[in-house]
Image (cartoon, rainbow, N blue to C red; front, side, top):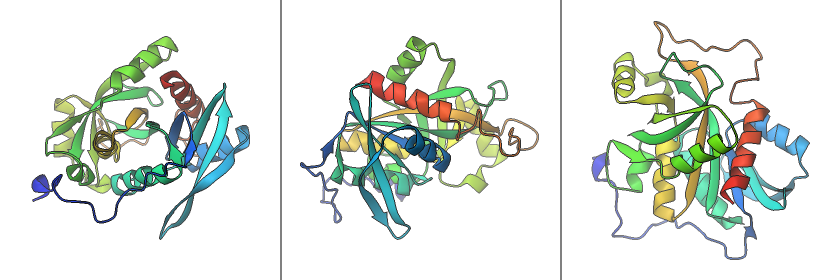
Length: 252
C-alpha cells in the first residue's frame, strides 16, 4: 500500500547529484507561471545557469542579482512528481538550501477574496510523492510558515494562514472531499505543497510557500472568479513575483 512506501533502509537507484562546483546562490525562486518567467526575463539581467532535462525538453534555470544578493529562478512543472524531481535536480546546477515556492491555488472559503495571499501551515497529503520521503500521515507541517507570515507582516502585506489540500487529481476534487477538507481548516487546494515539503525535510532543504487565491470551490458551482485575459490578482500577476523576490531577500 502507498502508506507503506517510505523506505529509508535501502539505497536510491537513481541518486540526486549534489554538485559541489555548482553556482552558489542565496535562494531559488520557483514559479509555475510562464507569464511570470517572461516578466522576470524582461525585468532583470538574467543569465542561463543551466538546464533541467526531461522528455518534455530543456527547462532553463536562470540567475540574476538583486540588492547585492544572487538568486536563481525557474518555472516548475505543475503537479507533485515533476515539481519535486526538478527541484532535486537543481542541486546539480545551484548550491542553496532556500526555495521560495509560489503560485495559484483554489479557494475553499468564499470569504477569501481572489488575489489574497495565502500562507499554508499544514498540507493534506492527497498525492503520492510525499509518501516516498516521509512516514505516512494525513497532514505534513509546513515548516517555515511562521517565517513567511512574519515577512508578510513586516512588509505590510495582507495575508491569511491556514491548511492546504494537496491533490494529484484536479478533476477529482469532489464535493464530499471538499467538505471534509474545509471542515478540517483547509483554505486552499493545489498540487505540490505536501510533496515539496516532504522532499525538503528529507533532503535538508527549506521551502517557503505562499499562494495566490484563485478560483472558488466554496459555491454551488465552481467559480473561476476571473475575467477573460485577467492578469491582476491571478497566479500570473507580476506583483506576486515581487513579493516572492522580497521574501527571498528576507530569508537571506
